[in-house]
Amino acid sequence: MATGDDLLKRIISHSKEYGFVFPSSEIYDGLSATYDYGQYGAELKKNIREYWWKSMVQLNDNIVGIDAAIFMHPTTWKASGHVDAFNDPLIDNKDSKKRYRADVLLEDYMEKIRIQKIQKEVTKAESRFGENFDKEMFVKTNPRVVGYQEKIDEVSSKMRDLLASDNLGGLKKLIEELGIVCPISGTSNWTDVRQFNLMFSTELGSTTDDASKIYLRPETCQGIFVNFLNVQKTGRMKIPFGIAQTGKAFRNEIVARQFIFRMREFEQMEMQFFVKPGEEMAWYEYWKESRMKWHNALGMGEENYRIHDHIKLAHYANAACDIEFDFPMGFKELEGIHSRTDFDLKSHEEASGKKLQYFDPVENKNYIPYVIETSIGLDRMFLAVLSSSLCEEKLEDGSERTVLRIPAPLAPVKCAILPLLKKDGLPEKGTEILNELRYDFNLQYDEKDAIGKRYRRQDAIGTPYCVTVDHQTLEDNTVTLRERDSMTQIRVSVSELKSTLNAKTNMNVLLAKL
Ligand code: ATP
Image (cartoon, rainbow, N blue to C red; front, top):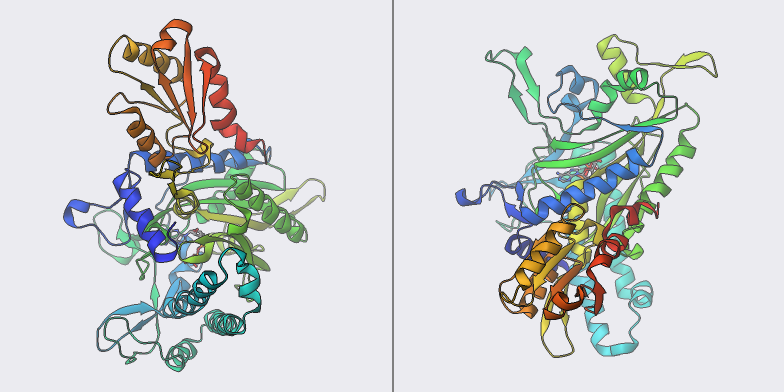
């Protein structure tokens, strides 16, 4: 199977060919860093969202969900710090006139070492040692590889320090010291690094004065903070409690690459958990563990996840980490977990002049709760699912198949009903089974082409089961049930189908593991 850039290209082309993700407004040549989800993509996305929502709202007595507006009062973004500080460090190449994010140039530099140096050594050693090759050991002990890794770590730590201290001059100096050149012009003729605000703005109503300028939300959590008391009071919530929300967020990201990993319009799934000050560290650890459990229940490989603890913290946080996933581009942030103290509620209290405090009946006093936030990008999760599930396999008979091993409860289509022939009453029997099961499962009916070809089509969209209706079905009401991953076929009675499919594809299978 392809890796790295090749794997990403395979995922992009597979997504397009099979109706998962299309470039936005493609007939007009697309719109950069914006994508549309097709018929299967929308289903997969919906299932991931549902898995997240149910795990938060349905499984926790003390978490409720809301759906706040995308447009918010402009002072929200003043209070949150986004108007003044939601910036990216940008640098221009004077020769090509191209603009880059300074931190992304440095990330790319490190990625190049990873792919061009480390991967090359690994591939060389792999072919030298053959079957006995122990990649993990080799990467840990080979002096050349260790040296490259140390260089990456050094650049990464310098970069984080410079970003955390807003040292723009230092970022430029580091880019120059490393000899990083513009990929277009090939020169290192750089401007100074400048800050650029990532929020999209628009006009409210028909006047054009400043007062009517509003923003498209760059994150969903502010809708939760401003509704904190509304929810607490109307839901009679007692601390600790959480508010969850999923929805679109917008960022004018300057670097528009890596498919749906970084988009200008994307979807977040965020939960703010309000706790008593002083208890936040225990809850931070709780949510770290709980979120990893959510990921691991999917069975996409524990080795594909790692936790990156932030050493330098944002001024309002007293602990933070990222859950990183091994995407085709390497380990990158998939989800953030942050202990945000009382920063957000306090800022909104100051900016609005309204009290955002909780009356603790046990302590008999008012206080501003502390907040633990879990924040995951739905689109990034979608890419993680595709990255770990796209497989190209050689079969025993020498043929090949492309299969999406999507965790069954997330699969867009749960089962395909396939009459072996388009005659002899088989389509009618197939339709009867379809109509019986369609209230419980998203199904597909397909009677076109040879059965092998139909199986391949379902493999390519990740359908966990295929039901084949044949002449025997008409006699004894049994069908062939084919499983996607093992390709095993068993004979089952039509009356057992519902329970068999439920046992593997129902969302509860995942939720029960949490
Ligand atoms: P990054 O460092 O990758 O830009 P971030 O730290 O700015 O991400 P957060 O503000 O913490 O991200 O947002 C929470 C989550 O939202 C991220 O973990 C990620 O999954 C998702 N996310 C953020 N920006 C984008 C984007 N432009 N496109 C898709 N998903 C995004």
